[in-house]
Image 1 (tube, rainbow, N blue to C red):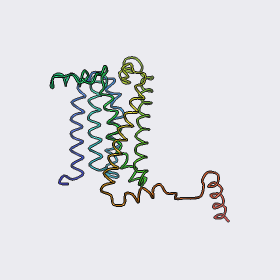
Image 2: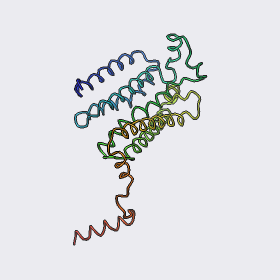
Image 3: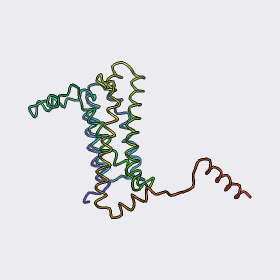
Image 4: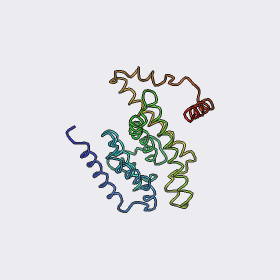
Length: 244
């Protein structure tokens, strides 16, 4: 790569800061904007502080960057009021909602799908580099954690809506009258993560020489002895033997 890893991240950071500052000007709902950015800025802070000891790949940072940029658009307008249909009508001469027969604003649905599609790979990088996940588990665990993260975010939204209530709570939830909104959001995030891991698997299947061997080994039994109470007994015996 002609651009160093540090410079590449600096460019992405600068672009995100510019977008953040521009969209921080006169958001549709300042309270909702602040709530939407609470987790976002915490996440960006963690990424910044962890860079020296645990830098991610350019691919991971790029995927995170795209997701965060879309999130800032949602935070500026509130997710339920992002004027994407107005943009299509004005710039391209047709209504996207009319074309698909949509009766609600679907920007939030798109971002939830992209949450899984764009963030599952960075999560996989964490698993592979920290937990040393291989084979089947290097695809299953990132999918599982992405699904769990989506669920936790829905719980966070629910908690915030309960605490703040009123119009702010409604704006932050963005259910638009759909009682199954949270379930659909989690399903879309899960689908996005599944697509991301499927693409990653197919790429690795093509270019990784020992893919099948690693996959088979990851599903083989490493310890044939049962755990639970049997392991507790073994640990106690080992401790007693070392003390004797």
